[in-house]
Image 1: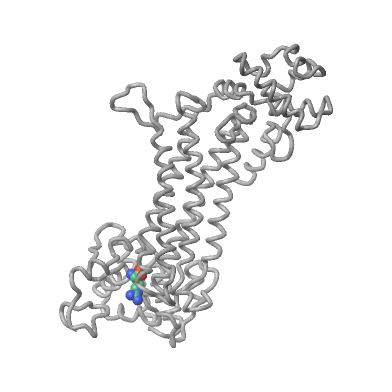
Image 2 (image 1 turned 180 degrees about the horizontal axis):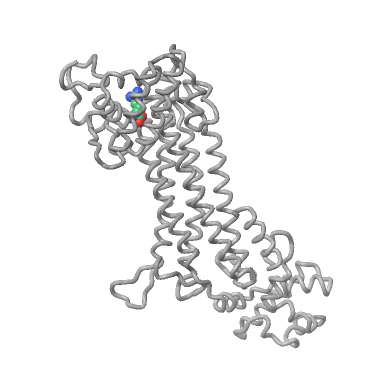
Length: 462
Ligand code: ARG
């Protein structure tokens, strides 16, 4: 080996890499985030090698102790990362050799960086899912708390962002709980599927050493070893499932964020966001901007981008490992960081926001929001076919619109001019509270149903 060739794999090389080669090849700047998982994996591997009689107990002990020293150096910022050593795996092994000497060279028996990185990255994504899980539960709890404080407050329900029918604030908040809870179940499904250990797949074909893959799988909290070594080193579908679930979750976050942007505007005034999650304008003193919501709305771009980028990296790769796959990490780290940030910001905003009951109710009562209730009344009480009732209601809406009033402001006489059989009781269904209270079908917006769902979610979320 010459002085400049790589100390880990440079045996057949006469010279070290070109600087550009080093720059494109090195992953240490980002994969140093796998340090803890790498050390956990190596410690499990060393213990297994000793248990199987492949290395001595004293070598395994030295390796396991030395790795803890390396970990503490990394965690306390004392570790000097080297680009020449390419990645986290070789940086750690090289430092281990400096600390414990010769036994360090035995650690890599019966494994390769291919199964090593596949294991480390799985462990990292799995840890990340556990963090996302907790953040989603916290967000759902904040939404349930909002639902509870305004279970029967009326607000306009929209389609096409046009006033459609009155709904309850609690119902609207719980719609998001349903979405985020499905996100949670997607992350949990992905976690269960990815929880197989690639360690021991070695470079790609397995190994002739008598290793015990069940032992390392168990030590690392995996359910079982991956059954095919080629697959174990070469798929990154676990990261893609994480990014797909993250993309869907980010999409949901961005919808809620968009609603908060709209709702906090002077035109809506449905909610007041706390100062803690807003910013001011340097020129317009009256402004309070929903920046956190806007940034959540925007962050989906990078999360979708990571998903597409990794899909693109993986498509068309022949089995098994190719260096392309080193590009799996940066995108996933970035998406995970931004998802966590978006979830935390959303939880904070939801917790702090004040729904403005009076504005919600005033908006619910305008825009002919109870026109469907009127049409339903004509069907129920006068026995009209729904299509006729729809037409008559349309005529009444047009009448109210010309007069610049809402449906409950029409006189009985005006109504009877359109259909002579309409009676005074019709006014009961034109009030927004009666309207929402009447929608008691399962999953409907009636406060009665909303309170049942709040109780259900409290049971599930704890
Ligand atoms: N840094 C590499 C990666 O992230 C580790 C695996 C390298 N394997 C290899 N055969 N060169 O993919």
